[in-house]
Image: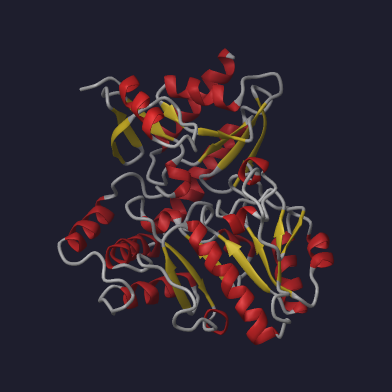
Length: 401
């Protein structure tokens, strides 16, 4: 078997350099653990940015995919198939919504929600054609398509990709007064992450999400919650917005919806809003395909038990208690919800990338964001002992710095 550097060199030569991965080459994975090409095992503390909430190769999800692979994988939406209706019904029932628009990637779900909100504004609210606006929050991350980076303030994502799509107004995250001031008669929606993942697992101030719901109701504006990273049990509830006692008009879901097996995403919401779409106005060759729906239905069955929400809440409390002990001992701050934390490395310490590389040397994989912040998001199947193993490794790295 070739050594890891050979695989890395091949990637560097033939693969577009749009990522900066750690120098590890994974060949196998199971549960919360991965194994590289040389047989070394690592604890996964990233879980595919929440795409692997149920761990690697969860047996129920693998079984569902395997069974469907033996039947039919793709029909296109030119025809009906026997998985789509059940998937949409079961996802709507799970999320307490009325209608489902299946897509593939998270960015596709956000793009679809933007289109639906604009069409609703023109057809239902009466906004003049071409004038609809959507209010977004600063430091957001909703994907990297041209339209989505149009309202990003991350210059790495924006530089050299203009001209950009108009129709978005950005205000500081966590400032409901700024959103109130930004809403006009032409505002179609407010698009928000209940917890900002890419920004460093930023939790909004108390009352913020409830204030947004009130503002949207008072001003006749849709509330769109991007739950692609925060949803499906990551924060200790089915949806992060649930913890605030708030309901959105539209939710975007993805990542964990495909169980780490298929790219599966969806927009879910009210019939009044999603019902504005008509045949030919939006679609996807692979969106809602039989294989994706079969895997998605297996994910829904796992979530319907409540087991993973409870695991996230219980293990998350343990994670945050232990990480809190490191504040002042190499960390300057810890934030998050459930089994999800953003930890800031104290000034004068190692960079986030250096900490990630040092952790890799101790058999733990995670990744930095914005230079000095680590995002910790282990699979929800992780044991408390393995969770402690990863936290202990981080404590050692900080102590050795």
